[in-house]
Amino acid sequence: MLDLFISQLKITDKELIKELNKYAYITTHKSGDLIIESQKYIKVLKIVLKGKVRVYQTFEDREILIYYLNSMETCTLSLCACFSACKSYVNAVIENDSTLLNIPVRFARDWNYKYKSWNDYTTKTFIDSYNDLMHQYANIAFKPLKDRLIEYLTSKAHRDVIRKSHQELARELGSTREVISRLLKSLESESKIKLGQKMIVINKK
Image (cartoon, rainbow, N blue to C red; front, side):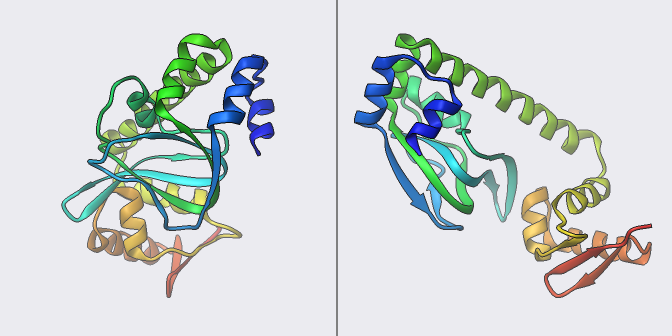
């Protein structure tokens, strides 16, 4: 898996490859595992080699999705910890069973100054995360929740079916279960969806 990461990032610095092999290590995680916890110091930069990770913030009894991490991606906020020791203000949880590459932050920081290919990777990560955050902000600020809900259902459905509870949907969209349940019933009354037990069927017109 480390060789895959090196090839995917087109890392050619021989010294960097040596250091990756020496200091980085791979771990596997099950769905639901918490890998970054809010208000705790980040000591290891975690890069997704395989799987999917959900990064979110909590406020009272609500969760706000920040972004997802997919193959070859890492959390920008973890990258920030590489340059300045700081506590995380987000949580990250394994969405699908995942394989992670772990790099102690002190090495990730030094590599940014020593190796161009690593600097290119971290720079791209900052840019991509910024774009994701701007997209997320625009959706929350300007798009009605009902529209975001139907778009979310359509994008996540497999063969027109999505298997998530109302609470899970509320968590994904930064709302409450009561609000989501009301919107789902409204969409059902408009014949756009059909509700089942932890299952929603999208009606095609």
